[in-house]
Length: 216
Figure 1 (cartoon, rainbow, N blue to C red):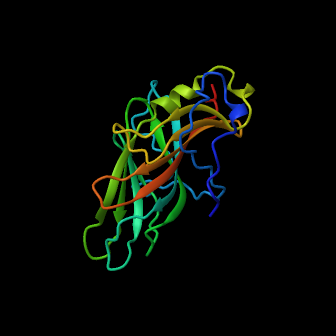
Figure 2 (cartoon, rainbow, N blue to C red):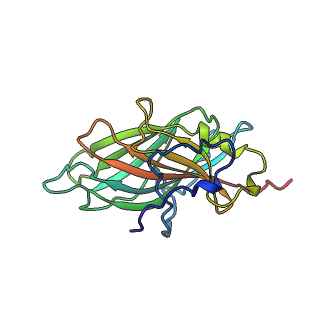
Figure 3 (cartoon, helix red, strand yellow):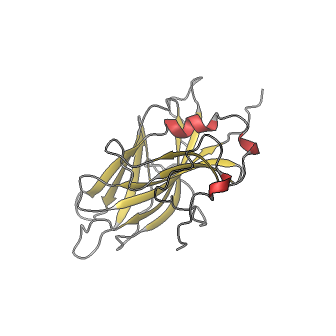
């Protein structure tokens, strides 16, 4: 497991970023091979139900790992993650016997309304009974979508922080979240503190999928 790296060095920040901020550094991007996205219905990664002219695009949600998740079996748990946005629902694979699981798995959502939050829930898989909930959280994507519209993004140095979102009582952040320009893409890294549970955090990363143009 790679150590988390700081968002950016001070001289890289663009002019509208507060240079006096001394908040906790955001964690870095993990370089792991991503398996194909999985849908709860057992299909592929992109859910296209109800798409129309108001489709904004597709959001890739990388479920990285869980930290200090709750124990739901005798000594451990078999966790997996479900994300929901509107009527869309997707899930990761199950990681057996691990309360610090690494999924490193990409799930994809169709975005029609950037104001809709995404709900994330962790479950413990049970063979003989209903799967037990292990906490949940929500995150908003409007700030991320707005960052995609910033002018001349390609002129920013790699690693430029476009926006910092501190943890507060109105969000589920365990630490500061950074929206960054990295490797010619806008990404956002979030560490989410789970609610309705004894303990647990889930680390995720957001990235926009650039769909190829539709042939005429």
